[in-house]
Image 1 (cartoon, rainbow, N blue to C red):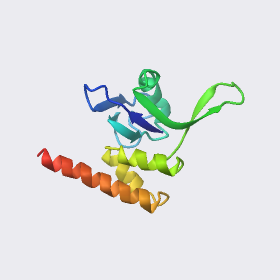
Image 2: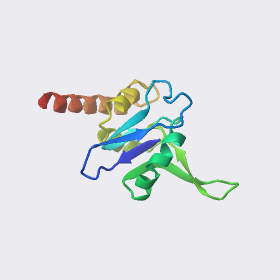
Image 3: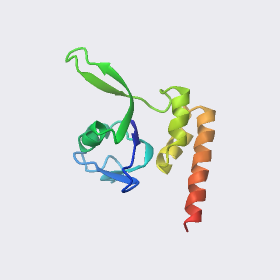
Length: 138
């Protein structure tokens, strides 16, 4: 699930616990997700675990979900259908990449053969800007 985390100005980093995963991690011994201000991708297998921890921020519109909303045929309730960077409109995908400061996500998108060459080039540019900003603060 791609999200847009809109920081309240008090911090640019959101730590989301991954409580309830089978082994407490999800394959990397990681017990929390770090969400940077801007766009981030939450792995699909972790989304159901993370969602209860961020539901209030979604309701307060501090986090925007990048997804399709569909009605469940059985319950008639609205459900969120996850979209990858490849499944969103091209203009929205460009906005997501340009607004992403999560190096891990940018590298994953950049290495995904399904991602267009245009988006991979944008990932490279965004990673270079992040590195340039980091080198200025050293």
